[in-house]
Amino acid sequence: MNHSVHLGHPGHLSRRELIQGVSAGIAVTTAGALLTACNPAPDRPASPAGALTPASMPQRFSQEEMNRRWSAVRAAMREQGFDGLLVTDRTDGNADVKYLTETNAPYAVFAMDGKALAITEGGGGNLHDGVETREVSDDIWSAGINAAISELGLTRGRIGVGYLQDIVRLPEGGFNYTTLDRVRKGNPRARFDSAADLLLRVKLPRSAEEIAVLEKATEVSEAGLQAMMEVARPGAIHRDVWLRVYNTLVSASGEFPTRLSLRSGQEGNTGSRPLEEAMQAGQILNQEISAKVLGYGSQVNHSVCVGGPAPADWESAAQYCIDLFHNLVDWIRPGRPISEAMDFYQQEVEKRGSGYWGVLFHSGGGNDGPRWGPGRPEAADAVLQEGMVFTIKPRIPIKGVEAPTAQIGDAIVVTATGARRLGKRNLEIRSVGV
Image (tube, rainbow, N blue to C red; front, side, top):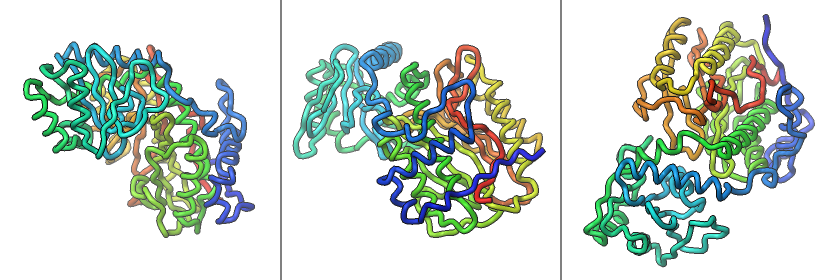
């Protein structure tokens, strides 16, 4: 049975129009229309064409959500013996600061009792109740942090430091050494220990409000995926396709994507910037597309064949990947160890032949969560919990093709009885530019 869906490209759009799509509004409108037309979701209402705009996105998390976060964090602090937290941003986001304050401040101090104090150089904007800013001058962040520690009564407390050490993808930490050294010297009676594990695990079970935001981010990611399918074809320049997807994501959400990488003839994670190379007929096009809404990203993946003829094993590998995705969704239940999911995945892949392990479960959210895969150490002892959101992205080798693999994945949320997809598109074998 041939499962292929052939999508052509919009020949009426010029290369200049594709690049300028973000200002012209072309990208989102066309992508949304085709996503709805080609991939109806009978059990869920489809968004009308052109509905994905920054104005249609959630504008902020609610006060109730902030109260929930603080309650969960304080419970974890109490369990681990912390009196306060000192958190910072990092090179790829400020997930801890934003989680605790919903600001873009470089630093924040949070206590078991009292307000969350965001350390900034300017105003804090529309703050939630329970959040206040403390301004510093001349980038002397340690002075503002020391004042906040004193104000919150933490000068003799045990303070958990975010991004200090042994964190996901930054084993040696990401906290500025000079700043922390000055804070320690300014608070000689306080004790400073890493709170990386606390901050990682407290975020894993998501609230209904967070899940709704991640569902919206998935919708935007799928619009980006569809935009890619519209313009990818033999001879298309990677730069033009990449920019079309980028413009679609930014036009829809008003935020820079957490991740945008695509490549024809190579794995999707090798093309994270526009490249001057042409797509070739018969190549497999892979991608990692993660739009961002309220700072939360949600990744989608969907290998497609560019033109034809396709590699002989392409449809078999792609269908096996789709079937394995569904088998993994069916396997998920709260209480099951993540490690068992990795073992199950490896066994299923090896039934067909050798495999690539890498990342299988990619956490959704602030780009600071674990990325689970066979043999990976990140929170390897974690257990599936209701409310967890992550993308399942299996990889299946295509016989006779050196690169890439077939990779088709979507975001899911763990429910009380299993799991459900956040995406709406049909998971099926696709060819583009035919």
